[in-house]
Amino acid sequence: MSALSKVWVVSEAPERFAALGAVGRRLGERVEAVAVGGGAAQAAASCGAEAVYTVAVPEGGLVEDCAAAIAGAAGEHAPRAVLFAAGKRTRLMAARVAAELGTRVLNDVGRIWVDDGALLAEHMVYGGKAFAVERVREGCAVALLAEGLLVSEPVVEGAAREAAVSELPAASAAASARLVERRPRTVESVNLAAARRVVSVGRGVAAQEDLALVDELAAALEAEVGCTRPVAEGSGWMARERYIGVSGALLKPDLFVAVGLSGQIQHMVGANSAKTIVAVNKDKNAPVFKQCDYGIVADLYEVLPKLSAALGA
Image 1 (cartoon, rainbow, N blue to C red):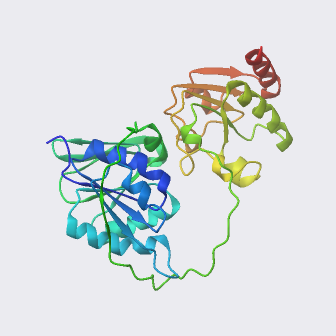
Image 2: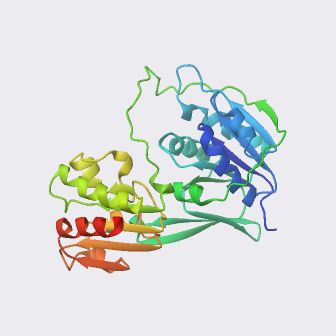
């Protein structure tokens, strides 16, 4: 058997269903969608699912409080896999669903497929130093799909169908946590995982205003700008959404340019799937030179203006 009998895709974000549905159709003979909250039902119905279930967030509760309702329905309808897009809220929700079903979560899955009736999921281990493949032969698999997988999954247009929509029993709010208020958080709108070219900067840049050199190179390459964790969370020079690494964004771009960064595994694991890696660092012994395809041993303050000028010529 080359496909699972039934796959569920679950999300509270409407924009996630197109890619989740595409993965689900690749893995399963039948795809059913679970829309958490009131705003995702229409998107769930458009992702190619044969059936759509909606579950309301309880009054005063959180998205993850819907886990018990989802797990209960999964126990009744018996999907072979329940797929979530990896995110802050969905991590906890997936963990609760898995616990209710007596299993564990396949975290940050970068590749997923079916072989001989079993679900196989590949993800990084040991801080990105290796990849592991887990095989689920029976029962229900709960998986969190990494952003890179969802971005690269081909989405077939016109997958919408007349799906029956039904509502799952309402979940009760968690006793240990209560929603007190909602306040908007200012975030930078960037999707590094979708970028084909990325320039990443480390602490080799001496001052925040010098990031203009990186921006000029990125503009010349038509690339997005990313950074190491110290640049985002240590100095606060760049937004948290631009942090690349084991606990940040995981990328698969065509081109990754590492500027003024040492190349520690915690950062490079986020980009080691790039087709081409170029490094600029004045330290010839920097670890990044063991991981790049092309290396420039020079001061970035001399190299970047020349690269930008040459690319813009």
